[in-house]
Length: 125
Image 1 (tube, rainbow, N blue to C red):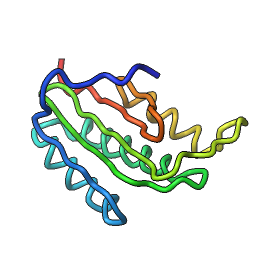
Image 2: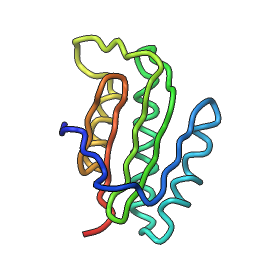
Image 3: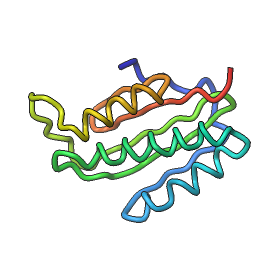
Image 4: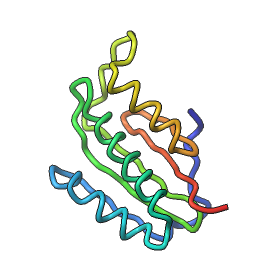
């Protein structure tokens, strides 16, 4: 995991989703934000966001907010949980292990800070 890098300037577009309806709005929001980006990248980003939201709800935590932002070359997702996860110091479950592999494969960089997990996907160059 890497340090939490910030956008150099303001993101070109961003969305904040919260509440029970947030998950249902994710695909349409990402499709709008990534208009003109290859369908393969869009599918990867949707899968990444779905996994980060699912991970935020594992181990008894509650999903709070999802922040999506994009500049000309990167797409960034931040998922915050209402309560910190209480992850046991044991092996990951099969779902969590698969999710970690997906995040490692799709994200250019990712990490956690407190109860927020963030990830970025390189869009160009």
